[in-house]
Image (cartoon, rainbow over all chains, first blue to last red):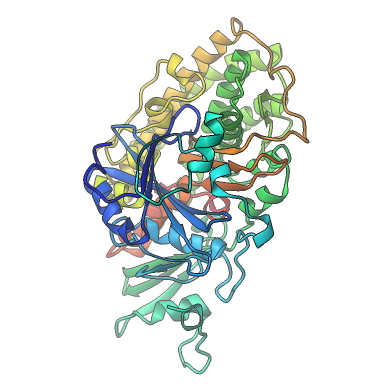
Length: 170
Length: 395
């Protein structure tokens, strides 16, 4: 993973395109998402999607990037605490993210600071309902939901995926 | 920024309009006019609304307003079973519903590690490519209608009718197809259908030069599309555009070629590109794609007889089937670009999360930047060249 070699990441996992469709899963701290997006912009990637998954540990924001010629799909993942679902917008780098972020606000209530036009996109303007936020009882641990693949590097104290790897080992 | 400050309505203000119109007017310059194009404008193909700030005939600023056809498919996915969600996929994009069918069942098959029989793959390719032709014909007729030419849509619907007659035999419907199943397709292609396709290919191939002579080479059309709506490769990258919009800007990217799914790696076809980056480029790419689609169809129909297996796998998932826990992302090439479906499962009968990535959505998001400084009439030309399907944008 040359792009993120000198970048501060929480975890890098090598996925399998044949089984999960994503080549690299990169977990980041919340404050590093804009820098990471900038890095990918200058490496020639384009944005595919921004969307959230509501899990037991928090709201996981997925940023999917693909490359037109190299054929490498990277998923940047940022875990947000349910108490404070706020993250910096990457719309300054990938302008297409503006709509994806507004949609994520509609569906999951995630606030993106510095998004140039942070109003509802698909739901009515006055809507305060976030239909895809799950009831706390129905949330499932992210380790069960995600298929991130083989972990290549991991920061100390990051144990979101460990439960899964132990299960796989057994 | 709290939501209260964002959504505060300003009833005491003298400026008119609803929330979005008022929000838009906050950034207006003096002596300009704010114009609502849509949601009932004929050239917005359904219910797209674009708020424009115009100075005379020129657009200073544009902002698409979405949500008039929003149906929350992603929420429906979380309350229906894996199987029950398939009909939704026939209704996201009425132009090319089989691509959405494929993206969804493909994602579920990837998640569960299901192998689809070879014959089913051939049937998927044949029906999906026929549907792509119907989609491009619909775009072609409607685009020219937007530009003021009435005749082409009659020709387009004549050919499209023949395709719908073929497709209704294996799929049972003419518009909102939902015939793909997890592990295969609903119905096999019978001999008569195959014969109909064999008869159709040469007839349609002869029509393409006529379309070129009638429309593509026509000076009136060329004046409306050449040099209009320039999108550089950088714009494509920043907005994540795909499909003919990206190929019209010289980016040789087609999911069928760059990330081959199913049996597309077996077919010999070209990925047409144009370097002009304008509406004419996108137009020409789609016209050439129709010829390439015919090539794929021919090869697929020839290969169908030798294909092994049935139209659906043995012991295919039943309606109460439980998918294994995990996640999968699957992308296919639709008439408009890259359709992506991200399925997340907790191992139960219903999906935990379904994300639908629609190509029209990303393509349209570039409109505000592309339309800056163009004539209002050219904005119509740009919107049409993006080939928008509004239910797909709003989902």
